Length: 133
Image (cartoon, rainbow, N blue to C red; front, side, top):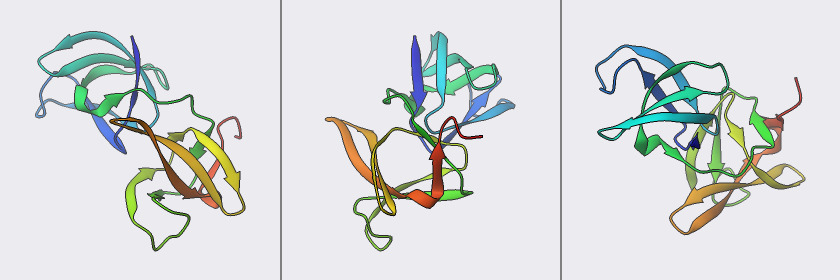
């Protein structure tokens, strides 16, 4: 089964506990393949770099296919097209986003929610198309 990281970032651990050693950090939007489940943890393969380890299942969900990635060190996702509006949460550099549309200085993106998806906005200067190197 394939799922996505739905937290800004989450730790991939060597064992299914918070106190085991860190294998790597997984970023929002990255895809993982679940190989096993145990006590609220999933043993996964991170498709970005083939690392394997345990991820807390609360950090996993389903996202639309990404079209863009974050370029800035950190960017915020806003409720409205206004940096003074409510910030839903942040995304780190390298996070992958599904952009619905781009208008001027803002990109409209899909975020998972209890009722399917919600819309958030990110400044376009903070993202680039996923294929852009």
